[in-house]
Image 1 (tube, rainbow, N blue to C red):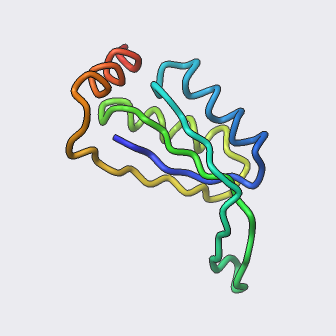
Image 2 (cartoon, rainbow, N blue to C red):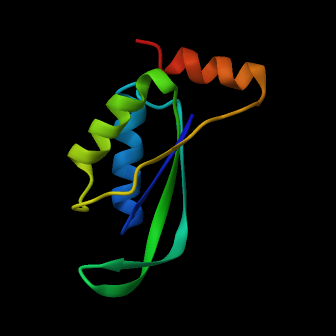
Length: 102
């Protein structure tokens, strides 16, 4: 499973990533950016720079990943999108499972 979220700074992205990996909720988090995000918020169209996190985890850990992001994220309504992994390197997917095992 890959979970996506964005933040308004690289430092915040790094803090979120570090917390997820340290807690065993993610095997790996990649940070990319800045990216340009256009969205509507409180009736206005916003055009902002954000940093995107690609969080590698398992379906079983998804509820805890969501709670962690909602608790630690500075946004009122953080983006949290979970994408299923349909295929991949068996060794890598096993590693993700091992790193996020309870």
